[in-house]
Length: 514
Picture 1 (cartoon, helix red, strand yellow):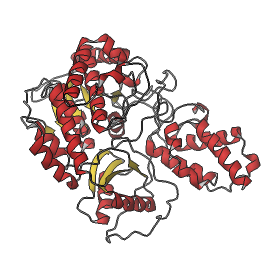
Picture 2 (cartoon, one colour; picture 1 turned 180 degrees about the vertical axis):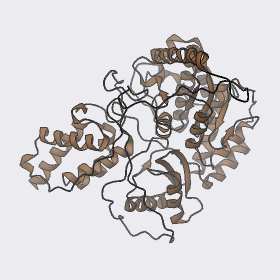
Picture 3 (cartoon, rainbow, N blue to C red; picture 1 turned 120 degrees about the vertical axis):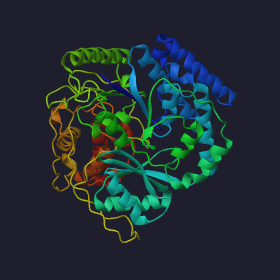
Picture 4 (cartoon, one colour; picture 1 turned 90 degrees about the vertical axis):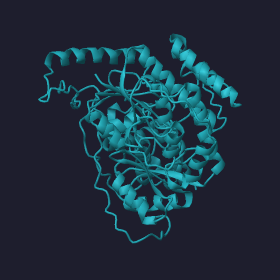
C-alpha cells in the first residue's frame, strides 16, 4: 500500500501529554524532542516538549512561536513513530507552514533549522501586524474566487483550495466581513477562522521580503523522502528553504489538486501526522473511499499504525499475485483501493460508531485548515448590512449533498427543514427538545436519530465539521425562535446535543419570563 504522510499547518495547540506514549516508546522521538527543545532555548523560548509529554491538560499559550513549535513537535514525532513501525511514505505533503515540517521529516532540513525558520517566519508576520482575517467558505474554489472578486481589492484573494466544498479567502478584516455578508446572502456557509497570522495573500509581500532578508540561510540536504508542495504544484527539488517558506506567504495553497494528483499516481492511503483529522478530512472529501489514518486520534495510536502495516502487507501480497505489466513495460498497473460500500466500516480517522470508541478529547478549535464542507442553508438570510460591490454576477451554489459516514448510512441529501411555529414554552422540556434535535441533526447528516447520543462529541465522535455545526445551529435557532443562539460559540466548542438541548430549554424559559 502506497502511503502519503500529510502534515497540518496552523491548527489548535496540542493537548498536554499527547506525546507521552511516543516519548516513552521510541528513542528517535525522545532525541527529536530534545533537539527542538535545545533550539527553542537558544531562541529564548521555553522547552516545547514538557507540556506535550507530561500528563496534564494545561495549555500555556505563550505566543504563536510556541504554538508553531508544538505543532511541529507533534508532527515530527508522529512521523518517527510511523517510520519506526515500518510505514514508508511515497511522498510527504504539508499544508502551509506544514511544508516546513515535511521538509524536516524528509531530511531536507535538520530539526533545529526547521524550528529556527518557523520562529523567524512567525516573527516577521507579527512585526508586519496587518489587520487581516481568513474566511472559510463551503463552496468550490471557482465560486470562492468569484466571491472575492466581487469586492475587487488586490489583497482579498482565494487563499486555499482544500476540498470540493472547502475554500478559504484571505484579506483585510473589514473586507472579509463584507464577503461574509455576501456569502450569507447567497446561502453559502462561511466562518471566520481563528489564526495568529492570516497569510496566502499579496498583502504578505512585506513579511516575505523581511524573511528573505533576515532569516538565517540553512543547509539543504538531498532528503530521504519525496516532498510535494501544494503551493508550487510540484515536488521540492533543490529550492532554497527560506525562499520556499517566504514564497508560500503570498501564494495560494492548492491542497485539493495535490491530493488528487498523488492519488491518481497510485497513493492508496493518507496518514495525518497530527493530533486531529484536519488534512485527512480534505482527502476524504476529495477522494471518497480512500483510506485515511490519524494515529493520534485513536485510543491506541501504535496499534492503529501496526494495522496499517498489516493492511499494506496484505495488499502487497495481493498485488504481487494479480498485477500485470503495463503495455509499455513500466510495471504493474493494478489499483487496489476502492470506495467503501454503504455498509462497510468507515476508515480512520472518523471514529467508528459501531465498533470503536473515540478518544475523549475536546473538539479542536477552528483553524484556517479546519475542514469546511457544509450544504447551503435551506433559506438564505439577507445581508446584515448593505454591501457595495462590483457588478460581477455569481451563480449560487447548487444544493449540497451531505455524505453520511459509511459505517452508518449511504449518502443522502439533507432534508429541508419546514418552517414551524415556535413551540409553547410549556412544551419545551429537555426530553422533547432532545428528541427534536436528534431528528433535525439526523435528517441533516444522514444519521439514524437513535444513534445520536446526547453526550457524543459532534466533532470528535460523529465527524461533524465546524461549518456544518454553524449551519445546524442556524436551523436550531430558527426552529425554536432563538436568534441569539447563532452567535453562541460555546455551543460549537462544547459540541454535544445535551449542551445544545439544555441551552434551548434555558433560553426559551428566560424568553417566556420576560
